[in-house]
Length: 239
Image 1: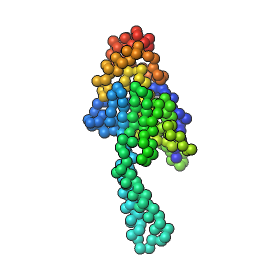
Image 2 (image 1 turned 90 degrees about the vertical axis):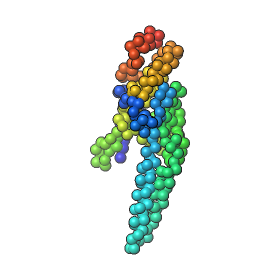
Image 3 (image 1 turned 45 degrees about the vertical axis):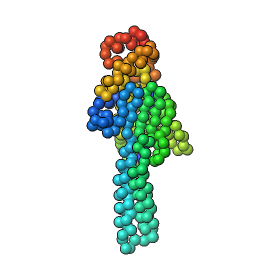
Image 4 (image 1 turned 180 degrees about the vertical axis):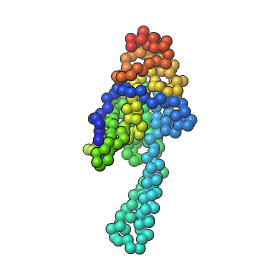
């Protein structure tokens, strides 16, 4: 079972986010972070296709194994056929799903977020400030608290029942702080060597705009890359 530890996450940088370093970004050693620059942050969320292949293959094997028994009755025979067809569906899905529709994309400049929907559906897309993010706690039937996960409610495609999409299996507070920081285009880029080559360009863009105030609140400092840039921002932008 699972439950929300609160309703919706506030758009606040509450804790230092994980450092997005170059080696974590494709085509280096990283395979999850596809793109990380001053315009876009793109993450592969296609783990469902791999798990679908495994689940589908195991389901087919189990179904065939059940059917191979001579003494199988109608109930178990019907159940076995159902398991096989379900396995075929998930196996085919794992091989045919469009990987482009299984990514998390943050558009920093335009304030747009895109994230996966169910099965073959295209990406859900909308304004970042409208996204409904929750931190869900999984637990056992005895009520013992388990891991916490960052999940998105189907904000941009409302349904009768809320469908939660797990966005990250890492520390949910750090991940959410990373997203909020990155999507605040009036702040410097988040920490990490992957962003270093874009910091000067991003600084000059914000300078041309006279360093507007941040879009979202932060409980931690979000300094510029250098003391000189920090002083210039304070002089021009007043913060």
